[in-house]
Length: 313
Image 1 (cartoon, rainbow, N blue to C red):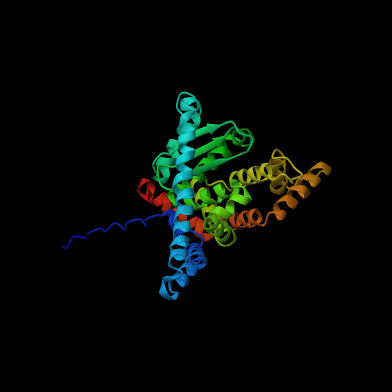
Image 2 (image 1 turned 45 degrees about the vertical axis):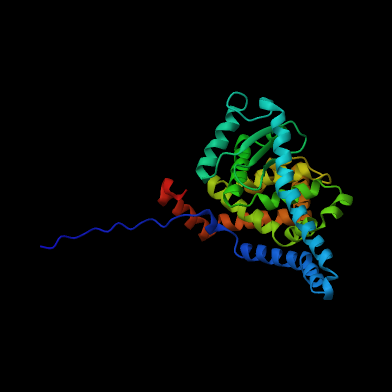
């Protein structure tokens, strides 16, 4: 009698890249193509002038572009890391001073499969959980304002999101945007190639990148409400024109989930709604998060993660 051979079906491998927003990679390719056309195109045309008249100008344009790139992607992160290290262990996130944060960072770094970043806790009035650096190990900055604004679950969500960006290799370009925002407008002319790239990224790619990072964070935390609260609190605290406080976010989310109505509640609901709609990027991200959380793609990704267990890393 022939024996039956049982063939075990392997679980479908899970990759974070599988939930990347459709079209994000092609849009980034378009951004770089347009950027090179703007910055390198004139250099090529100058180099083609007869008798090498424009060759020196062409070389100058190329060098300008390379130096600008070096400043923002190599020199600036190196300077930030060096400045932070000069403060010694006082601001470093270590087991003996910020043990809870250190444990969370180590846990999620292992979970997403990236080297643990060099983490620092800064006393700053801006709520920020930010990853910097061109390549691993990155620099992770958490501010005192972020810890004050966010509940432990929301802070965990922010940390998971930062590490998810590292896994998706989406740290360097957002870092450029952050550095460019801190560059005074007159000085941006001196690094115009990076200014042009920043503008193109902001208008054509940034929101797609943010939505992808939100998706991966949702897969890690599996709590859309906490993720929404974290996004709203950070946005409201950073908006100087916001007419509500970050503390009102909890009441806003409770009203939406429980349909509670009161005079103060309606006012808060209206003002926070205005703040959200005044920020089209934030509004789009929140809508995309709700849509993804209820989609078959989200359920399939969760099923793949659970089936693969520890192997999905």
